[in-house]
Length: 323
Ligand code: SF4
Image 1 (cartoon, rainbow, N blue to C red):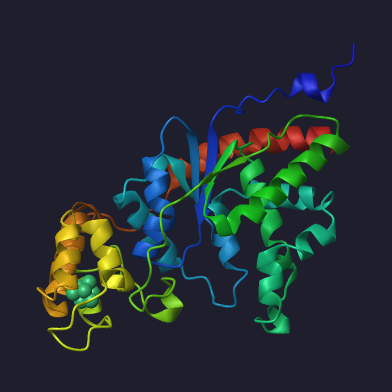
Image 2: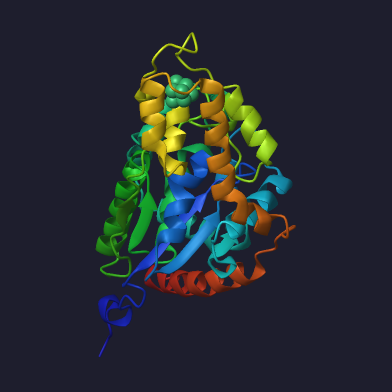
């Protein structure tokens, strides 16, 4: 009796498999940490795969920097990401092969309508509206489906990519009459955005970052330079309008005292910033100490583990597609 795909490929990894990734933009800043990494290390009860997405980095005009890749790996490990769950995407070539195979069933219009593509159309030079850039969400779908992930931790801006992944998985399962791919669910990160020192989204290109692994003096210098709305020492402040206070709320257990002191002008901004930098430096000291002991990280163990899972899925996909 012929065995159909549904019977042959039961979802071995159906329960609680989680995938996420981060572009290798160099040393992590606090925006990266609060936007993704803190959530990664807080999750348990999942089979986890975390990738440093170096293929994805190539969709930007800036050249990939190997030192940046290695720095990011060391930062992530120092922050508590287990090295066996962590790998460089390009060390697992099955990502690209699955992306190619999925591209055969993905309508072009699905990719053209993704918000990240539409948003960049007017901002990028036409020479950088590349095939790879259009296919970026498809590669992301392959990143997720390769591990038959059931859960993907994301920010709200990434939800359209998860929906596209689900559409691609649904279409593959329908076209090939299988249930190989589960429908991944987003795990939303509801942490408020950790803003940059200018109050905007934290980003290296805006030069408004606080590096997670920076020195104590660097953290203090960056916070000292932040602008506040109080013109004179005796002016009462409005802490909720101040980015320094938003850092206090995260790092200073005594932030309510700062709130009152600001509102009554009992504290000046210079002292308030000093307290803020001390709170951040104290919280990050253990990770910084660990980071100082790490150098270039090969992530071989993580890649080996990831490839075992990836190869199994890819073998099944190719069999289903009659390759
Ligand atoms: Fe901001 Fe602190 Fe100055 Fe208030 S006292 S405006 S919270 S830096």
